Length: 149
Image (cartoon, rainbow, N blue to C red):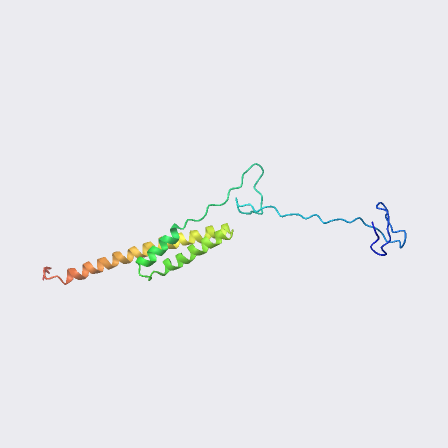
């Protein structure tokens, strides 16, 4: 082994160079650590489940309410604003789940579901109102209707 300062040959077990007095440190080769291989099972969750319980990933929100709001939006002629807002909340819920924000995904999916149901009720009420309006309008203009005068 040679001194890195003056180049003088020194024994391997020496702590200092006998020529210049520089402290000699053993060459330590850095240990290369490899990162663990990616785990594709369950998503990372910072909090640990209680001892003895197994972690299970939250259920993925169903895309059914998103599709329901889209169909309702199309059949109502894009006039039902609640269905449009429901589609937005459904898409945001799916996106939040994909990013690991399960609580926000559940909240947005519940909002999507509620908006879809309210939208459906309003749409059905409008259809019933139009049918009644049509029936009452055609009944009053019928030549076969007799009035008691």
